[in-house]
Image (tube, one colour):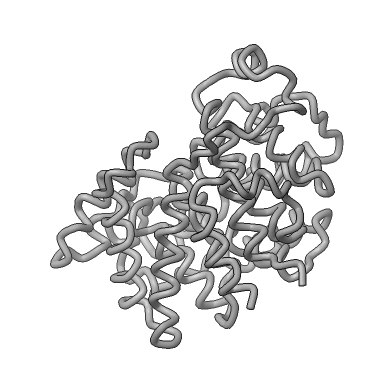
Length: 334
């Protein structure tokens, strides 16, 4: 067994830790501080950010949901919101968290409030899809449930249709890679998935979220998100034809502060170095954009593809929250 879940979760955290010190720097500053990007070492201590913290929060919600069998949308929403609120009030929430998540979690703390009224519909920040990898790793749920839950967990904080679509696509990409999909065909598979789902509004999971927007119909609401994802996948596909690994990936597919660009740039770093997962993380961490989120997504993709043995043992030993990450990995790999 390649242990895709363990590999993906550890890869996500390693990318997060590698990109943490470089997140707000431009490439020349990173090179001055760290030396050549291909030689970047894991920081000591190897601390993660809110990206991994929220991935663990979602993992806990999924474990609790599985304890009673496959739960429905409303129970999943309750479990996920409680974990996100707990993260928000934790003293460990001091790793430069995004304002959107904080604002939404403050509203979600009132359990009498409909979660849709807490959702930030204006935001398509990457804070929703950098935490969604566990939904691509949990066994025993069908694709419809996976897609609905991926979009719902996004909508709890980031309700913009592009955040929903990018979260769905990210979980789908992780699932495809964990199941053995050929990486070089991945972008085509993701484009097909986006086209198939372009006007599919998942009402059972999202309820009337769309009505809080300016869209005239749910299909128009969700298609906007899929269209933006399709556009960035087209840019990614074009870049991969002549990708230069020495060029900042953000120049091709975006800086990653927003959901669809984080997905595309994380994929670009992974796909340039399919058989060199550590090099993929280093390239993602040495970028001018949201380096920790880009690198954590690259790590999630690489780990899902190559499995747990992809990562240096001494790096795995030092990563913060190692035991909990490996615990979830072992549960889902089993």
